[in-house]
Length: 183
Image 1: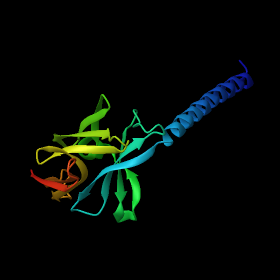
Image 2: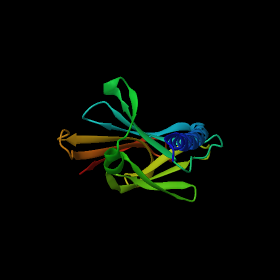
Image 3: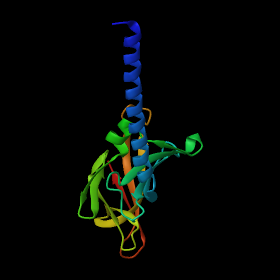
Image 4: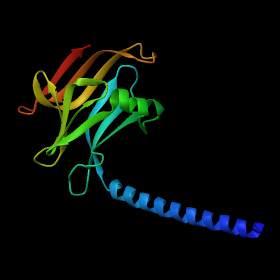
C-alpha cells in the first residue's frame, strides 16, 4: 500500500477521533451548564485552631428550589491564608476528613462527615425551602451552623483532634446551642 494512502487513512481516523471528542466536550459543557444553574445556600462551616482557613458546606439548590440530586452538597476550602480563594478538597481530605457520605431517604439527605461518623447529619429543606443541616447537639436534633476542631500536632501526617465543638441553633426556641466533644 502506498505511503500516501496510509497517511490519508491515518488523517481520516484522526479527524473522526477529533470530531467525536468535540461532540463529547460539547455534550459535557451542556451538562455542566445545566448544573451550573444551581445556586449555593450555605449550610455550615468548619473552623480550626491551626489557621483561619475554612471548610464550607453549601447545599446546591436547583432553579425549581430542590436540592441537586446528583450532588446535593458542595464542600470546599476558603483559603484565607491565600487571600480568601476558593479551593476544592483533595482526595484525602474528602475521603478521610471533611467529605460527606450522604444517602437520600424520602426528602432528607442523611449521612456523616468522613472523619467523625459518631454523629449523623441530616440535610433537609425547611417549610420555606431553605436547605438546613441538622445534628444532635446536647441530645436533641438542632440546626448546625459551625464546627470547631481543636487540632494538636497539626504538622503530623495524621493530626490529632483533641476536641470538636458544635455550634447551632435550637430548632424550637431559636437560642444558640453548643456542645464540646472531647476525643
